[in-house]
Length: 199
Image (cartoon, rainbow, N blue to C red; front, side, top):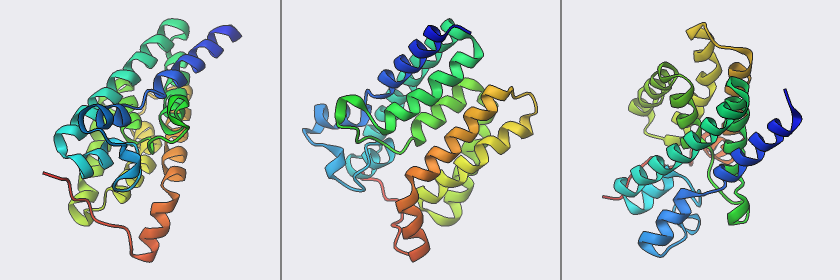
């Protein structure tokens, strides 16, 4: 595996991830910085919470497209390992975007996009976990953490996961949980708010 291909894959994945769709959508459509509203997170959930479900769906679609571009480039350069490198780099870029002062999202939509693009079955399992938990608790952060923890477990359950993909699942789980550490504190304190999207 050529080192320049690895570096190019990681750099391209990070730069694509750094395109913060949430910030661009909210600035372009509403003239506002979503990081100054709601939870302060530049992600699809906060966009939906502040500006409505349509804006949230647009944000998720944009995150899916940038993730797909990163994975396609990674696959072209290095095959399956390249997809995994690009996925991890894109997630890092989404959370700490170069173009927006390293203040981005918490990685949930990009993680979901990665699951969809790597294995649609994995995506369906994680969506089922997310909405099953949401049915009982109505707290998105708990749903996101639950789905993240299920990520590598679901890969093992599917049974045909390669080592690079499994490591990607572990990386995603660790990243999402780390970025939700503030939410975890509020959950333990009983102060984490329920999700309410603006109509």
